[in-house]
Length: 155
Image 1 (cartoon, rainbow, N blue to C red):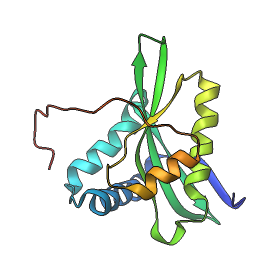
Image 2: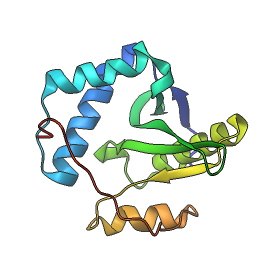
Image 3: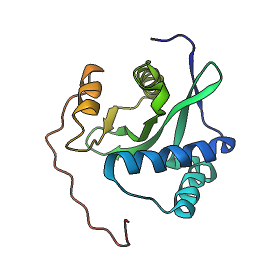
Image 4: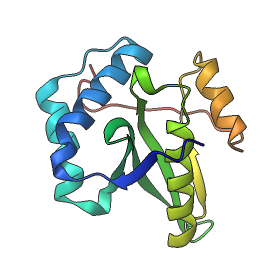
């Protein structure tokens, strides 16, 4: 791992970077252009109510290099929280330099310290590269299929 990569909890000052990363990720992975205003409000909402989760950012030599969001899912079966990876993004110039590996290690350490029962994420079915990365870090495929019923436009 690149020892110059530093992982820290995001602050409200990082909102513009987080919004830009989320918009780029949606465009790259799902070919969706997100509503900038809605995305900005949604990102800010995590800082307004930290019970929803938190963002981590990666910096390499002082340059913002990537980010991710962690949210929580309570499991009554296991009496604990799953930590969910969401909004994972590494800037194009920083890819394949250990940024995600450093972010993942930071999440795993924090999750274990907090007593989480495990880590989960969802990944696009056709994103073989990301799936390979997650497996290399010890993640296993779940046997669940995800369904949804939206109550408003998901654009």
